Image (cartoon, rainbow, N blue to C red; front, side, top):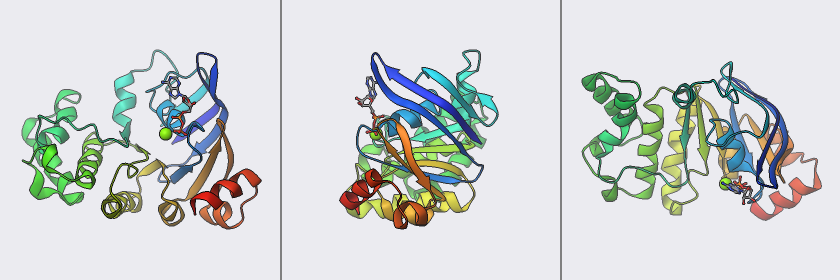
Length: 240
Ligand code: ADP
Ligand code: MG
């Protein structure tokens, strides 16, 4: 589903990604962990071209997204993204937040978009909040709306960048539960997270990023219990 070949990304003289090569299979859940500043968000943003790639290749569902001729809207349809801060439109209702992209980008029929959005809101446990405004929701509820909004485009891949980092601890579980259900349904997911329990339980593979590279990767068992690199051990000793 995703194939990355020698991906480099620099901001000016600052080389942030230093040659990442990896493949992520359909229906796979990959959790990305690593210290702050190691390039996790930049890596994720290169997967849907929120960042221009400096060199290398990124193929998503057979499309080379580094190709300047590629339709950026097609990429954004195929790859949904959920951020740490939910970025909901404050003056639109929950339902309007979820139907906006299908109506504007996909030109979907209004009633069909509404029915699909209501089904997605049910799925994330917020069916009764359709007509509420974001300000009246908890952080966890807002994040679940953001997930429903990303799913409204029927993406082939979902990217999550620390989706629970801004939430009060008691609100984290509901969001992780929604993500876990999505994983069980077979969604291909790349999840940058500090939730090591989630990575261990839901991840098929875990990437440890350090200084712009995937330093170590493996199954959760390999990465957490049979850690190879000293650097990974040191990181895990601080977060576990
Ligand atoms: P992480 O998500 O692992 O904390 P990031 O990918 O956000 O790391 O950042 C990695 C490095 O890239 C940091 O040094 C950061 O300052 C730099 N960086 C990220 N985005 C930008 C940007 N838009 N412009 C300049 N530097 C950036
Ligand atoms: Mg980040």
